[in-house]
Amino acid sequence: MIHTTLSTLITTTFQPTTNETFSQANDTGRGPSCRTTPLDAERVFLIFCYIVIFVVTIAGNGIIIYVVNCYRNIKTAFNLLIVNMAVADILDAVAASPTSISFFIVGRRFPSGAIGEIICKLQMFIQDVSISASVLTLTVIAVDRYFAIVHVLRRPMGVRSVMRAICAIWVVSGLTFMYEFYRMRLVPYGKDAVTCTVVWGVDDPETVNLLFMTDMLMKLIFHYVLPLVVMIIVYTIILLHLWQRKAPGELSDNHQKRLERQKRKVIKMLVTIVTAFAVCWFPVHFNHVMITFHWERYRCALPMGVIMAFYMVAHANAAINPCLYLIFNQNFRDGFKHIFNKIHRRDITIIERTSTTRDVISNATAIPNIGYHPSTPQLTRLNASSSGDEMADSKL
Image 1 (tube, helix red, strand yellow):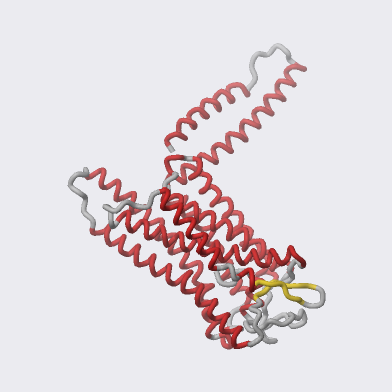
Image 2 (cartoon, rainbow, N blue to C red; image 1 turned 135 degrees about the horizontal axis):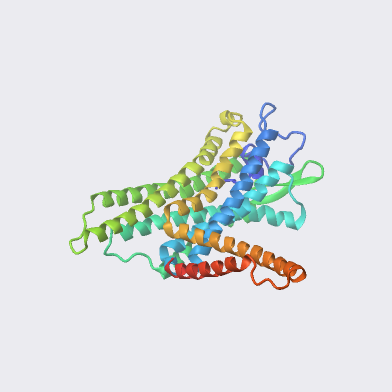
């Protein structure tokens, strides 16, 4: 959320007042006793983790988007908010993982020219906007569940209201971080290279430090602490309400129990998602608070590999979310199984068609008057199962 690109982390976190040319010879920026590059084993491990995070984030959130889009009965206002979070998580993975992996491979070197400038500005802007959109969506979901469960007489957000909220989330997030296009710039790095870093355009070190601290604190407060406090308060009220709630007299016991069980499952999923968000992003924010207020004492306190792992864990949150959806939500699990079955059936069909073609060619040349070959019953059974799955689709 705050300087989430690792190459930017090095140049801004450990040199908060610098606007000068970077030197390859002095690659630490933290003094001679500090190391700002990971060990080879750490580098390999973090590259592997980022690849896994990227694949799981794209695949998992892609499945969530596909399931909600394809099945009309779960295209609800609430699930549209889940889709919005999935989109934000995908954008975060697309912006963060490639640049982080690149940092582990080539260091701070960045592509030069117009393409490098565009990548430098966009990767930070997209990361900040996507994470902001994800956090704001979590907050909107919490407020929506509060009115849906605690104030049952008030109508929950409909599809139109949710779409307006989603548009507002992205507009606010985009406008908030427009300044990334100004401050993220390419600067000379060594003799013949450039790197992407924060340049405030101010020569006074005290002013630069003030801008740096203000940026850190604003993001910490408005994109972590404040939303987390709101969500904790809202979900605490909801849980207390569900705990004390009694069934209305006009509803049967079985029906009421089923409704309460469904609501508890949803709240359990959402509380788990909020907890994952809080846990995954806490190390990064702790790191930034220590850098902002205790830089001289903290700058060499932790190995560089540990600090980089903080960022990896933060971005892992985007991969954890779809896994939680699949664990807690039966509709998403059914949709995932259906997608898997469709892919599996398609592979079987291709294999059987290939086998049938080979058998036909073989039989035509060797035994022309045979009336049976093994693939025919299998194709029949496959077609029968397909019709059953089509009926199941209408119920999903």
